[in-house]
Structure formats: C-alpha cells, structure tokens
Image (cartoon, rainbow, N blue to C red; front, side, top):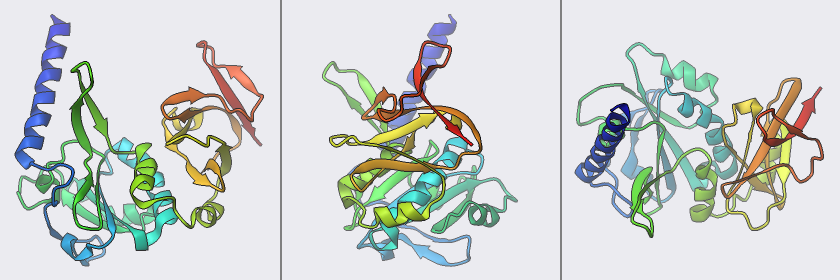
Length: 274
C-alpha cells in the first residue's frame, strides 16, 4: 500500500512539473520573460538591456543547501569567464527579514544579486515569471536573448521511458564550454584561487568532477587548465578519501597509489593533508 502511495505521489509530482512547464511555455529557443528588479545594492536591473552577452540566471535561496554548495562553483565560473563573456544574475527566494546583502557579501558573490520574498504569489516576481519550482535552477540565455539551456527538462529515451535532466552543479562548466568555448584566462584564475590542487589527465572527457569525504561525496566540477582537468579544494589538516567522476564514471586517481577500502567494499584514493 505504501509503495503504491509513493508511486502515485511521484506520478502526480511529475504531472505537476509537466503542467508547470506547459503553462509557462518556456523552453530552449524561447525569448525569456523580461523583468526589471532592484539588486541588493539598490541598483535597477533590466534583463533586456544586457543582450549581447551570455546571461546565467541562477535561482536559489539561503535555506537551500544544494544552492549553498553551488556558490563556490559560481565563483570559479565567474573568475574563469569574467563579465565580458558571461554575466551571472542570482535571484534568491527568501523569508522576510533575511539580510541577503550581508550573506552574498560574506559568500563572495560579486555579481548581480536580486532578492524576493519566498512564497510571494505576485505574478511579477521573477521566480513566478520563470515558473521555478526547484532550487537551484539555472537558465542560460545566449547573446541573442534566447534560452540556450533550460534548467529542468523531460525527454524519452529509445525505450520510451521518461527521463529528467537538470542544468546545475557538475554540468555548469561543461555546458558553458559548449556555448562559450574554453575560458581564455583559466590558468590565471586558477593560480589566484586557494586550496589543495587536484588534477587528472582525461583528454577526451566532456566533464570531470571530484567527489570525496571532504564534501560529503558531492560532485565538485573540475576545469581544464593547461591540458589537465583541475580544481582546488580548501582542506584542513586531516585524512580524506576521494574519486574522480569522468563523464559519469567513478575512477580512482591514476596518479595516486594510496588506494584504500572505505569499509563498504569501495576502493578510493586517499590523501593526507598536514
């Protein structure tokens, strides 16, 4: 009975998401809804006035842990591409009384930030205009002002089964490379960041990420720097286990012979930070 109820809830949720997408009629190739809003710095922002560069619309909230985990990735992406090629616009859905400006300043979110009230039913809020129902959600708008990548989409595989794809976290970098090309200042931006360096050579890979005990095995995207996939992780002294995720396949570090069993039958690379 419980299993049937769970399946029913899942089907209803999926149907609601389909209905929401159909109602908003937003998909790849569409002109996104234009909007004007005040930033947390008190400056007006109008989407249509920024045509000519790629815009990454990032919907998030300080109460959303996956959103918080995505902030370092956004910082790295901004450092790699800069304001000339890509402009990040983050729109947070917050509870009344939240000091969002202090939060974004402390988090180093040095791009356009807009804040709205969570649960505001006004049709004029950006979150409602875009039909956002999942956080984080990312829209990529191209130079011509068209939606290049939609955050949530459903499609059918060759067997007719419905599958879902999401444009967030690990896929941010690889997707941006597809549209904007490899960042020209990758080596310089990488050298300026702090942390322990992880790198791996995977010449034909489309996307590479690292996951480990240092981030609860969440996928952190890696970036191509001087022919290698690399990233920096700020680690306190201690012992950590990790693996690389190459196009969806988990592998141990080919350059690290210190391989251990985590006690659950999984072989992981291990690193000691002193």
